[in-house]
Image (cartoon, rainbow, N blue to C red; front, side):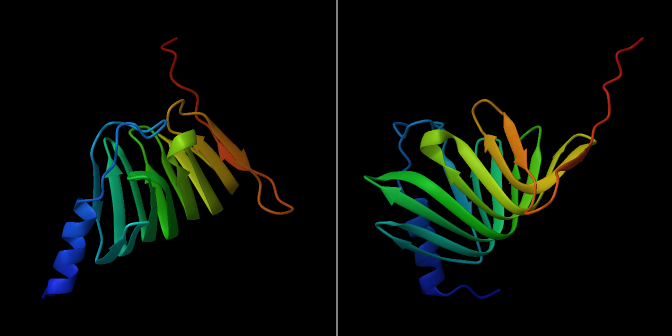
Length: 156
């Protein structure tokens, strides 16, 4: 695959985006980015095509990801199209996601599927806290949430 000078420059600029440990609620771990194409401005960045943002053991993947920077810190990340937010214990899938670092919340909307092991929960809107790992699912318009939960083997 041929890489143009512009694409290589954009990749280097994305790598230079400062992510401060002082951002409220954020981890001090480095943030890695990847995509087929991207742009950077002082206000943020745009990633398109197999877009991915990784911090520690959490990964956000989507068709497109926009990051919003303020005062040199990454504040909010918006993802759209085939969105996956993956933690060590859970996988969230939806049409769109907004991750607000200050509140540690990821809001996933549109045909949402949350899995943890064999357990599955579906709905229209999921609010997940990356710090507490608490999740709240809401049903789609005029619909209900649905789930399948498997009890853990208690060894009895």
